Amino acid sequence: MKRTRSQTKESISVSKSESLTASSSKLPFRAKKIPRLPSSSNNNKNKETLIPEDSIPPPLPTPKPLTSTGEMELALHHLRAADVTLAACIDAFPTPHFHTHRSPFFSLVKSIISQQLSNKASQSIEDRFVALCGGPHSVGPDSVLALSAQQLRGVGISGPKATYLHDLASKYRDGLLSDSSILEMDDETLYKKLTMVKGIGPWSVHMFMIFTLHRPDVLPVGDLVVRRGVERLYGLKPLPQPSQMEKLCEQWKPYRSVGSWYMYRLVEAKGILPLPPPTSLL
Image (cartoon, rainbow, N blue to C red; front, side, top):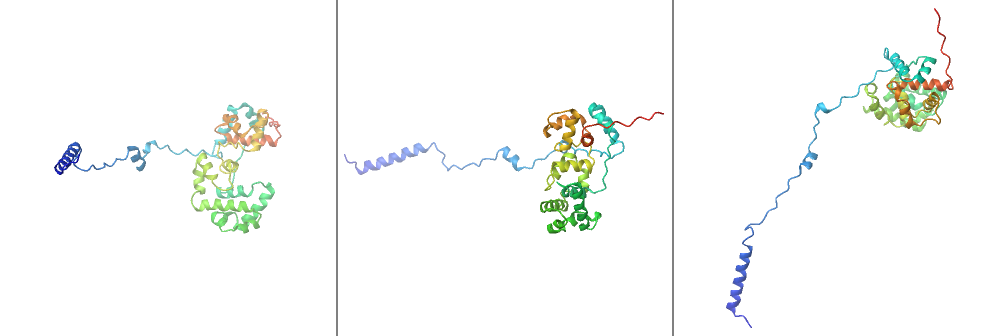
């Protein structure tokens, strides 16, 4: 059945009316997107975190060197009381003496030069190196950086060691290290800073801290001689591993440098304690 024109118009009119009725419940304007605010966690990431000054821990105090007046006496008194076995070594060997006349920089240079060399060979190369620099008082970061790797090899310093010396001098030049800052650093900070230098590892740092800076509480756990001394002191088998040394020598704190010094003497004596000198009778 065909629709008349009037029916078609009526149908279209009804459709429009229904459409308007159906859409009358919708908003009469185009909806806009509301921007989402960033979360508080994101805001915190973009803001600089301010730490109250009261919550910042103060720097660790630098320990008194063993060369300070009365410090060695305190160390020996503590070690005798803390470890009866070590007390026998203290009574058998002379009192430790720590002394050095070199600057921290010069001592670190010497440490690099002497690596894996005998004392005689090391001293010979060091003498030629000092002469190349212009004398002991001329050994410094600038004089080392002024020397080429070829010049350093000419006095017996290997290519890798020449690189190590230049890296040490560069860190001094750039202000990452200085003699004054080294003297003021606590043990932990000093260890981290020095092991950043090429060619300077844990053993070199421990030797530097004991014999140049005279720090009282350094335990060179990787030193074979100290480990051998601990083995003989306590009658251990087998040789204690570095990981065991901290526990074995815990009772020496805060004077583990002095205890380590006696381990060198014990090994030199082949584990046999010399008889203490006789007490004079008045």
